[in-house]
Amino acid sequence: MQREPRLLAGRKDTITDATLIVEVLSPSTESYDRNEKFRSYRSLSSLTEYVLVAQDEVRVEQHLRQRPGRWVMTESISLDDDLELSSIDVKLRLESIYRGVELTQQKKGDPRS
Image (cartoon, rainbow, N blue to C red; front, side, top):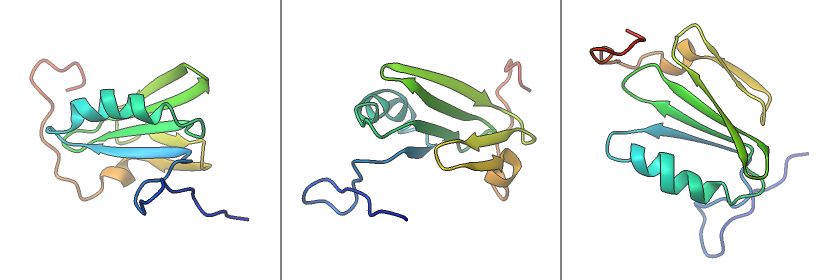
């Protein structure tokens, strides 16, 4: 049985009991999403997975909570990689995430190029 999410008092756009949050990174917000925003999200006891998706290259970072205060990050950088979202029991191929996205070339000197 699916339950209704808990919302922040007086807001209809802020869930306080999320188990998974996915952010699509942009150059203007990437630092904030990785740092202050993630620090804030970690205070949600319900959150078990935080995923950052680059919009201009194939790069998905998955942060999984192991226990309070312990997060493990896995990076996927190939269209052939699978992203397993254990919190919602879903497996996605990166190729399907990036389908239709125009990607820039890898940066010069990037070992993945």
